Image (tube, rainbow, N blue to C red):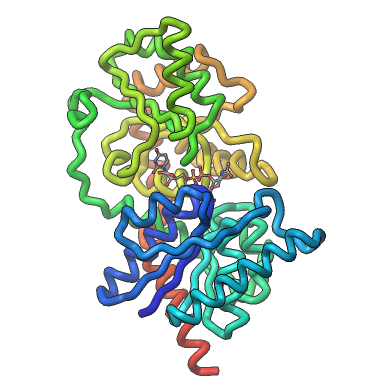
Length: 370
Ligand SMILES: CC(=O)N[C@H]1[C@@H](OP(=O)(O)OP(=O)(O)OC[C@H]2O[C@@H](n3ccc(=O)[nH]c3=O)[C@H](O)[C@@H]2O)O[C@H](CO)[C@@H](O)[C@@H]1O
């Protein structure tokens, strides 16, 4: 197959795209893949590391809104569509799949205009702006939350789950905490605020470190690449020492290897993080970002809380003290963790990537029979 994928901006869009690429390659090892991203997003560093050919569109002025109500946005969009068309013509894909982020808007739109089969994948319960815009033209739409169905033209929608769930669930991890200078025989709490880190989670964790220093469990605190230096400066200015049961990292690039070793995750409730957590059945404490469209992270988190798979802390209530109290409760209660683990696992869709590949094939086959 000649597969073109596009996903931009944050890990929540990029990792599902990479998991889908892996699934296609597993089924058809001689598949040619081209990933189109933007110059500015995380994809520029993540994708080439995976040995996937990457091209970037210069996509500016799309930071807020993909809409036709202003001339500049329209002009920049059409310019990107023009650039995308050239790349598509050269690569000649059998199918083009978009996973969200502004760049995928230009790429999938261009492909549709050129008569190439197109598929989009929506990771969230509340549909993103780009996917909403594309939904009228594309051939197939894969979703990961039932709640998304009614926000799309329903005859094109198939529930497939999030491809990243399949990737993490089938990972044979060789990771050991020793690689981080930690012990393999202690339960470990992983703290991370989505793919870019979260200011409030970082602040509360800094406040919690003196208490964590005294605990019998271990803590891996991931700050987000751009927030790492600030966290270290804050710790040093406040003269907070960090004991050897705590490790602070800017980013973890092999999350599917690390996550299976984690006892509890404390983090945001982004759709792809949730897919991973439920694929592995990791008990979690979720602090939804209140800054996202239609408060969708609260809805994501609530679905886990309702199933008994997670606990939720509202960001406005998050302090160092609160964080330590909730974490202590869970880390010290093996029975509760086990119950949450089982409840969490029930929500995972473990063949999501294969289901999405089937949808790609359907888009291609339907086109050939038309
Ligand atoms: C602020 C914002 O708009 N957030 C959105 C964005 O979040 P974001 O990109 O943060 O989304 P997710 O939580 O869904 O995904 C984060 C991904 O990054 C990975 N990871 C994270 C930290 C790290 O050190 N290493 C690493 O690999 C996680 O394992 C996961 O695969 O996309 C999600 C999916 O569309 C949305 O649900 C979120 O609401």
